[in-house]
Amino acid sequence: MHAVLTDLIQLLVLERIEDNIFRGESRDIGSAQVFGGQVLGQALSAAHRTVEGRVAHSLHAYFLRRGDMEAPIIYEVDRARDGGSFSVRRVVAIQHGRPIFNLAASFQVLEDGLEHQASMPIVDGPDGLQDVTEVPVDKLAVIPEKMRRFLTDKRPFEFRPVQAVNFSRTEKRPPIKQIWIRAVDRLPDDPALHQVLLAYVSDYELLGTSVLPHGLPFGRGKVQMASLDHALWFHRACRVDEWLLYSFDSPNASGARGFARGQFFKQDGTLVASTAQEGLVRVLDETHRKTKSADARLQV
Image 1 (cartoon, rainbow, N blue to C red):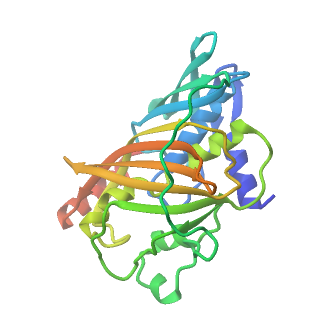
Image 2: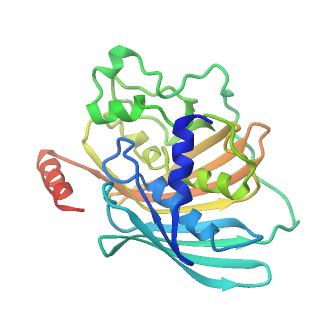
């Protein structure tokens, strides 16, 4: 298996300290703080470790504080309920003695029921599309260093945007986009692992949809963005080592917050999962940017 994917799986497995307590490490992927998808995936992984014979069907989470990439994260699982068909788990992620993240996840025994779903958008398939890391050299020169690293480092997933990313100028666009996503190598046949990896990758690109109508410069630091909450519903089984279309839209931005929704489709059009997220989207002037930098140094 590809080394970067192996490392991600090891990152999400967690060390068991007690029956309901787990410890995880972090990786710097070029973001300003611990990547939200990492904490989301690790918390779901911890919850999965306390459930048998059931699969996750939904999770709801709140991001409370910035994560410290240099310190371990402790995950405490509360076995809230085990019923005849459903189990509920509550997970708190802790650093430096304070909670940084809360998650509630529900698990269900597999059963048949009514079936219907939304249609997949009609877009180009992944073949022939460029990966997001394939940025022309002249475009890399105008991108800030941290963003440049985020775009060019080797990743555990391939990302092929349907709409080309415009690095050179601002452009106002409708708050709709799609991207094809696939793990870089074949994965084990473990449904829980595929759910955890889907949770991890579901935090990519989602909130950014809410700024598309406003023509903000790409990666220029004029906007402060941070996830506030995240919800994910698993509708059907899927494999993240096969192409999935992640389709986004943002129906609202107001009050310095952006709201975005997402849907994951298999190539045959099967809807496998849905997401929703609200996050801080604050446009900064020079004074705000200096204050933000100072605050970032003080927060741990």
